[in-house]
Length: 451
Image (cartoon, rainbow, N blue to C red; front, side, top):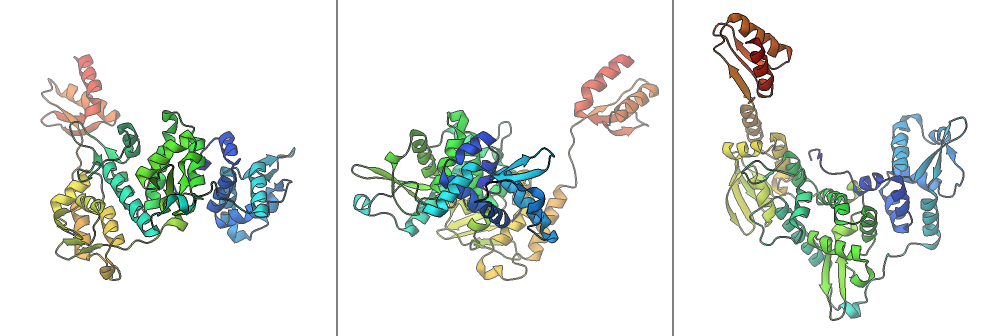
């Protein structure tokens, strides 16, 4: 997969970015402490458990002796992460020697957790009240449908059958960095936007959650309260029903938004209403390596540039339209071709040849995925050649100056533009020169002074 610039590594990156006071407030909850412990790298997790019953500060030099010299880099990464999340607090003595002490709130909650055991944030509703709940398979299908519907709406697709209930301002918040718009044109997917679509569902979700939390203060919601609720939600049991009456007003509003994304399913009974967490919600506090899973591919590309995608997803169809010409779509098959024109449209939108090739390779159908290469070499080579062909000429906005009254004035103008690094071209014989467009006002003023 290509490196994605718009998505945080995991949910804990947002937690680590909080001010120290708000981060300490989060540690009032044992669920947050457990979620943070889960997210730590293995070595950092080991250090946290070793320090759990140590009340006095431990010298940094002493902790460096816990690992062999060849693991010094991993030791530094572990300590840095513990300090970022304020699991460890740095202490300096009179001689300015550094020691590490465990955050008291975190330490107290985790000690209690180990002794008394964990408990659920809230008790599920008995089955006698909820009657029949969706099966795990039905819940997963619902979450996938909701998420794909949201993504279709996010990329401004005309193929979406029903929009989300998010306000236009909220949708613009989610689209920030993913779409770009030019005067008089519909918004287009940016390079980051295409990278976003290539990512695993959980990585996409983390990006959306980051934007949702960062805009919470505009809605009058404390981001700390929102982060706390989202992490708490990840400890609920998949497929169980939980009463909406146990939520605060902020949490109730958030749960409706999360239902639009497919993180929970809302149901109404005769007297009570409840929400059912999906796998998207229960994976929120997991690390990327824990929650990512290889998805079965669906694309077959032939040497004649024909493309067959075995998928029922409208989202897959819209992604393929970004760089190929979709000719027709059957209930479970999308047929198209990769053409010079379709690729030029993709390049115009900031999508690179390597991103397209990576997408085709990562999503190769199992029948061709084991072949080397999974995508025919003549196709990948031609995609790169078309990109190179398009990039041979670079357009630069400029101004042309000609009809100079004297050779001396022409040479002075050339020297002036050259000194400022804005001279693009000159013709001494015909006394013509070209400068960058942003330099035109200064050049015009210079000419006025010469006259």
